[in-house]
Length: 257
Image (cartoon, rainbow, N blue to C red; front, top):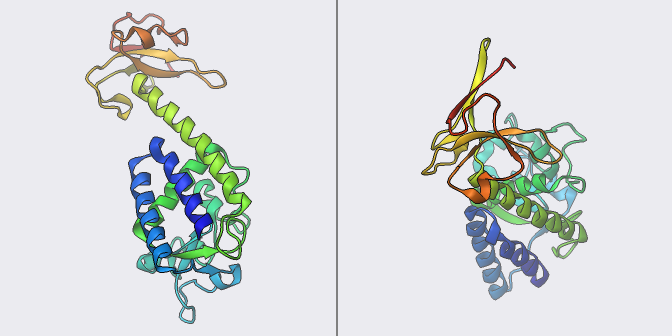
């Protein structure tokens, strides 16, 4: 139990740079763990075979699924996870990988996330936060992420390392989106245009900006809105004006795609 508490605490402390709902969820999880420690209640552990019986059928003991080794009672979502439901394939197993790959084949419904990219691991923890918030946690499944006592295994620690890298990348992307929100765009047979507004790129702000091409190493260019009054970011060598478009124009015409 203590080892699990430390593991959860380490992930939650990293939450200073993750969405607020993660911090709220972690606070709830830590409170529950502290209460369990105080009461001396052990963490329930289930074997893979035991978990496989919780598929919501008439003769099964319940309806469970697991994410990153954490088991949840999803009976409240029976119409989704129960027999005949659109997500019944998640029932009775840990299919963490499929939550972010969308591969719902037998091979894809696995808990092996060892080769997922940092951004995918962040998305997987978003799913974990969803289940922690909306469904009842019931224990841990013994296997890849937790040992027989319910203590974290090495695989979970490796995932947490990837998570921290994903959090760092997400924070950088969010910071970039505030400085360089994406342009609006539209296309027709005659050509297209890109333009900026105070809400383009789903970033609400006090300035509209002007369209520029932003070049990022290893990827193609994209249209972003630049605040010309922000000299620190508007003079970046990675920015390029659209040919034939006035420097301060909020809208730029484009040729046919």
